[in-house]
Image (cartoon, rainbow, N blue to C red; front, side, top):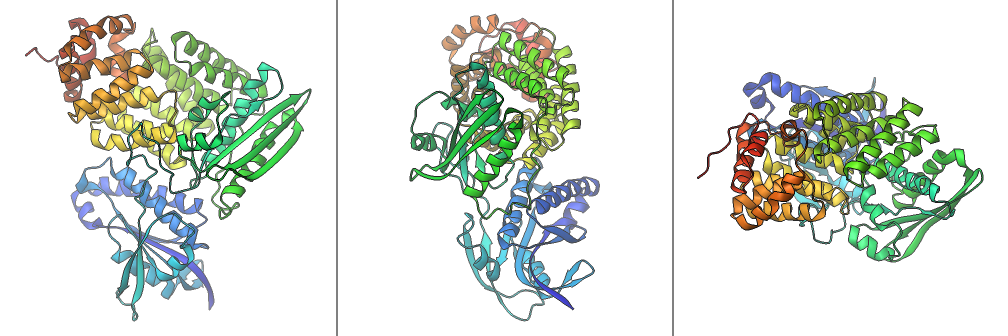
Length: 598
């Protein structure tokens, strides 16, 4: 017999028979979605599934660290998906992980090592992870997940007892434990912020080059599931500011900071980078790259790999890595896209229109540039959402086509799935928007906008309590996001839906203090109406009237896409109490009934 030592992960669904009896087709469809997600997570962590039957599956890994990481990733993904189901419809997995000797037979694994994993799975709690002492010995001190000893247990049909531990995977990255304004705690995984690379060329045109390189490094690092990577927009708030890296790390809640510079002369470019452990100020790594200007993407790839190796030597570089897609070989299209994104984040009608023009120019130069199609989708959506669109239907049709094109070109880019989320939300296809947001997070758990999208669509579906966690997570991943007002506006609506009007008003005031566009002002007015702040509401009405969108009727249905007319009526009730005029109330109500006074 051929034998080997292997880490075995066994999983099944608690109460599967009951779920099937209640809703056979729905349960099996949800299980198929879960299986696809689990299979992808197993592959990402260097494992393979070698057995499955009904609701159960069994996988092997070469590393105990990777096996437990996969188990945690599976439970976090399933927890996120179950939040969109009624409590009695949730498929909660139990997972057991064991390290033992196994017999290899035609690709299958048999023997005691496999049996113990299956029995550990049986004693795990629904949504829990139970590991053997052998696995604990291998991972102790290497992972940040707390381990709870469960003592010696008898396992079914195993002649000897076993020492077992439970893995506490529910520890989050500070988002649920802290308010949006508190200093963030360090996450339970390696955390990094990439500061904007400094343009040393003396040529303002090269700012786009330096900014683009920074963004690409952030994106590439974010594909590593076990890093906590601060989003691009929060990092860029430090551009041009002389601030000590220790302070930056404290404000962003990260352990590592990457900084660097770009100098271009003729057809050559020099890029330097250094990685700093913020707590000690120690420089862990530094490197310089001299390349032809056309070789920018090789610089990005090499720099990213070097940073990964410096922070997390345990990562198996050849296993579980997502392919880093080069955006385009046409640098002119790339620069057009970057310019368009810059205009987009200025958040005014003129700037967004200018950004749309730049993205269309990028697409004309390179029709297969997925990022430009994605960025055009986002710019068109912003024109609608912020009340700048004169023809919502036309913009919605174009952004839907662009989102589909972006996804067809690059189905592995979470931004492309976020673009599809936007298109589905605008089309009021909420279930499909939910699936797109979940897929974006599956591809990149560090993707702030994926969590934001998940929170937004849950608000639209009336799952207000479940919307708060992803919205907080999105803000934690990007604490200085220029679109934080947008995140806060959705959080205000979540609290509003729960009837927590004081909390909703706090969020709405923070959103409107950051950016006074029509949606934030409208949410603030509804909150003021429900809290009886009539004088403040009356003072707000002229500004709301001045920012009213040209296509107001369609605007309200798209920007506040409630699936249940009762939830829309609840919002309209607050607007009426805040003093919104009857014509505007009818636009806001749509198919919902306008509440009568009193």
